[in-house]
Length: 114
Image (cartoon, rainbow, N blue to C red; front, side):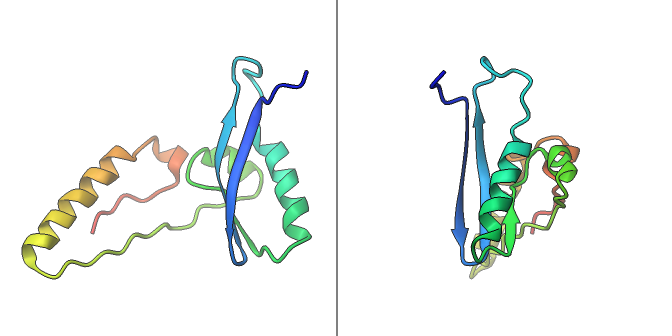
């Protein structure tokens, strides 16, 4: 009793509330799925404020779809002044995309660099 076993963190930008960070002590709760508890708190809070959109992040798409969430595109737009800079930027984007990949069904993301 009295121990923190789960944490959710997020931030609000105008009417969009981003809940992207979650942590769970899996040693104490190895089979607990925290999204239902989080969703209840988010709905209670969002209804009482000016929140119009709740962004649940990119991971655990299957669990979040059970809550009624759906994937939306996440775009990164960058522009470089000259050809060499564009080539370097393209290479950096490809490396970043490769580092950030997980299972297709988990991240709900489309892979497309530049």
